[in-house]
Length: 338
Image 1 (cartoon, one colour):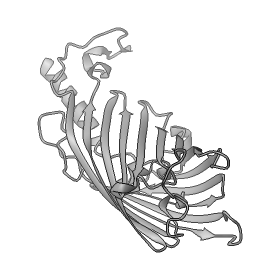
Image 2 (tube, helix red, strand yellow):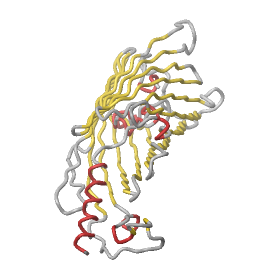
Image 3 (cartoon, one colour):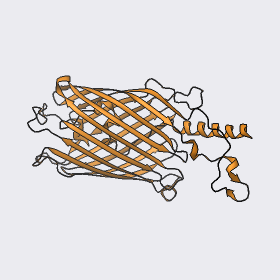
Image 4 (cartoon, helix red, strand yellow):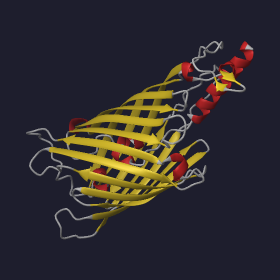
């Protein structure tokens, strides 16, 4: 009987690990720039930036799918770029399969007339673990009455309930005129993420993103913009994309997006971004963002309740800062596209 139970444990863990082979992708990718591409680290109009984003996916389905990312980055002109720190955490499924990543990021920017080319490197540690106590086994289920309240299983926990590994990433981003184009790769070293003892490499995640800014009133000091954007994601055999358009003014950013994948997990997403005090009389900028994905595939919005995200961004220019942010070759920078 114990062998059967251990086999069930093994199958559950294998299932969780294979589900976790896919990284998540934020709808508000522009409010988690360091997660999208390490080359976007340190690329903002200020000295110090804090980003926080939370994603709750398919809340009506059993087992939470929650994701969090916190990052802080600092511009250091003497090094030609910026330094950053990012923490990403996820909790998925009824067994609370958790992943936590802590990474350091460095970016280097080459500026030229009407644009900039930026390179980014990322390295850190990832921990994955499963909560064995949350699993339900056959000896805790009565064939007639169902789950036995307060029961405990005789199955012994497997020794591989967690694993830590070194993880790396890199990216490049180009801004030229009204165009922004970037590419990044994560898990370049293909770390072993197995919880069973058999090697199970984490597939690299590739991101490509494109944005184009269309100015609607060239005579305004800060003219409104219409910004079509596309983000493409691939990890192993899994492919996803997000295509949409933003309408951006000084204080407001409205977005409409279509998200699709080969797994037919399609959705229409709506985004709302507010810049609460964009440096009129202070050196600070506070941005709040919310979004909701309405599932349009066979999963349906009624079954899943969709996906909701909330984001917070805070940028600071230090008093008496010697850095000049408003006279960088008069060209756009990546922060002008979101």
